[in-house]
Image (cartoon, rainbow, N blue to C red):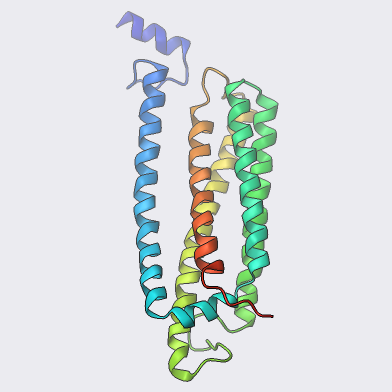
Length: 226
């Protein structure tokens, strides 16, 4: 008991329910992986629904997909990949106990995430102006009346999937702001950087989801307009 009390006294970040920092980190990492597994199952269900309907209405889904701005989608993909890189650098800086570098790379990751959301908002607004928002005002040029509902189904899935992804990005941005504030207070060091490490896992997961969304929504069977 005395040794446990001594360990907690020397490690302020060590929670009372854990004996060692290694045990605490393993438990935290396991918890994050379990959470991400549930997220994979959630997104996987949406991917399955999208795949089934794309198989049922291949021509209409391909034509609707071709209306998406592939250049904007590609640019946002590059932005998100860059944010993953800066997040890796933040984790590495935390491992080395470089406080200023942690803050710098977390801020860069936050900025890149903000750029992604801003570009996505611009793209959604573009769809609104084209009347591609599912609802009573929906209209897709070049389709017969009986095909409009199927095109509307594509855009319903598009907004549901990209909207859910954007929500995870917003949550990730909040996480980054928290990590930045904690890093500014000197909470992280080479001895304790678990929150930064777990934050990196979450951010990379969100990036990987987009890596699947981009080809599914923008590229598969795409009919390029010449």
